[in-house]
Image 1 (cartoon, rainbow, N blue to C red):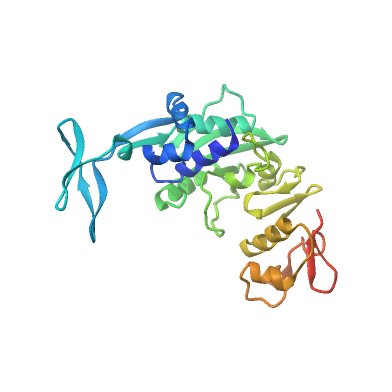
Image 2: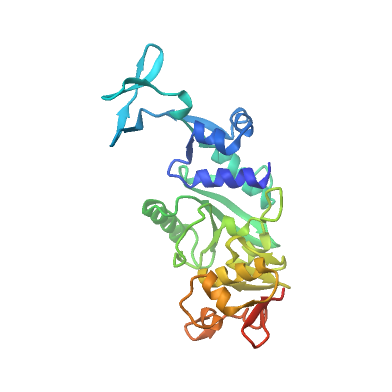
Length: 301
C-alpha cells in the first residue's frame, strides 16, 4: 500500500465518523476505490436519509424517500428529484486495517492486537520496543473532541503514571501546540513521523523514540518542518519558525531576510527575532541556519 493512499485514508479518519461519500471517494481514489472496498479497507457505513439541496436562493436539507424504485427528494421548484446512490452512500475507514498498518510500520508482530479503550477513538497497543526502548503505545483519533481528550487523560491517569508513561500517537494532523498530557505521557503526531520522501508507508521510529527520551539517529525533517534531526541532534521549531525553515529548504540557497520575513508574513524586522522565544534563541540558529552577516540566510544540514 502506497504512502499517498494511506495519507488519504488518514485524512478521512479525521472526520467525526471517519466516513466519506461514495462519489467523493471515487474522485479521491479513482480506480483504486473498488479495490479498497473489495478488500474491506473502506466499508459501507450507511445510506444518508437526507441531502443538502440548493433550490434557487434557498438552501435546505431534504428527506430522501423511496419512490418507483428510486431514491428521491421533493423540491417545491422541481417536484420529485432523483438522487444518485453514490451521493448518499457513506463509506468508513476500517480502523482494524489502519491500526495494523501503523503497527507494521512500528515493527509490531502480527500476534499482537490493539485493545479498544474508546470505541473508534482510542486503542492501546501494549508495550513494544521502539529503537531498542520499551515503550507503552496508544493510538488516538479525534482528539479535538473534549469527550475523547477527557477519556484519554482519565485512562492515562489511571494506567500510565509518571513511572510508567506512554507514547500517545495521534492520527489527527491539526492539534493545538499547547496540548499536554498528564503524568509525563508524551504526544506524538503520526503525520510528523511519516517519512514523506518514501513511496511506501514508513515511520521515523527514531523521532518517536525521541519523544520518550530515546536516542535520535535518523536525519531529516518531519512533516510540517516542526522537527529536524541532524547527526543525531533534534531541533524543534514553532509554527512560524517552521515556515521560515521550509522556505529556506525549498529555496535551495541563500535568501535575504526581508524576502523570508515577507514570505512567512512576519511582523518582525529581523529573522533572528523569529527564532527567539522567551529570551532564548533556537539552537538551530547558527548551527543549521547560517548567515553571511549581510542579511542573507541558508540551511546547512
